[in-house]
Image (cartoon, rainbow, N blue to C red; front, side, top):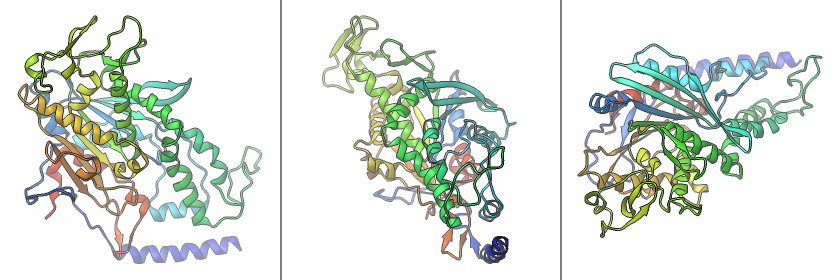
Length: 462
């Protein structure tokens, strides 16, 4: 009788799928870039923003060095980089997966993103290599993967920061509720591993795929476990910037004196985790040292009075640093600040910052962007610096992503290129619904085309 019910359900689903397929349309067959909804004044001007190729032409042709790209994954981090055996699937799982377009990912997240970047650049794919492991209290919290790409415009060094390990243990604790009666995985003796109750199939899938696998990530990060994730991420961010955390002072300092331009690509929850890690590094740097024979201000840069005067009424306010000599209070800038402020582009894929910041007392992202704007304005006479690009890419039918506005972060209206790029990750059926799973999981090829080519592959909203 069970198989008869399944057969009838399959026929109904196939009929509905065929009907909806005919009526499926994509509202944004070509990505559309728009100004933030709170933008005032003339917004009829064409939207132009740089892609990776443009950034490389600007920097690497005139200076020695390379472009650094830093990636962070988001929530629902399946196959994020740890050992991720394929989940047990029954016949109904396979049918629904096929109908909904859900694919089991055989490649890890970092390799999938690396392949998409190579394809967008038009170069051969390369294998990502293992980087470092960052532990907190002797437990692996963050790991990294790395890859290098040689292009016509120059060299790219990619760092993939993987924080999902810190949530895996919590996910595993709730795995016993991922199944319904009669469909549990079995052990070597053929016995069910779990004693599952009777559950409706769709309710069980929602619990398993949304609550236990996806919602788990922000719940864990916004709880006490978030401190461990930030501690692990700050070490990874310091390394990705080309720095090193001093064993004594615990402060991130320059390791190889690089001034490589940086492009950040972060996904959903990963955006918040990254900027929180940067804010933590800067906060720790600015804490006065209480250790004996340690400098009061741990400045990594010395700024002449002509520049310091742009930040203070008195350019001659200074402290004596026994390690670095004269340090100007007005321009006591850490290595992390210098590198974050020099990020040329920030691409936010399936952006969740406006939503997740409602649960936080402070807005790390807005604070850092405003600090970066003031920093660049102060250096305008020193060297030409373009405005910071912040590009949020999302499907309007994604229930978990939000467009950006200046008001979200109390951003100054000038000094930024802040744009939203709207894409359709799947078809909308009869104008009523789009598959919410696909809406939140874009095709990497579509996203990386925008990241690499910039505004050349989008059209401006009218």
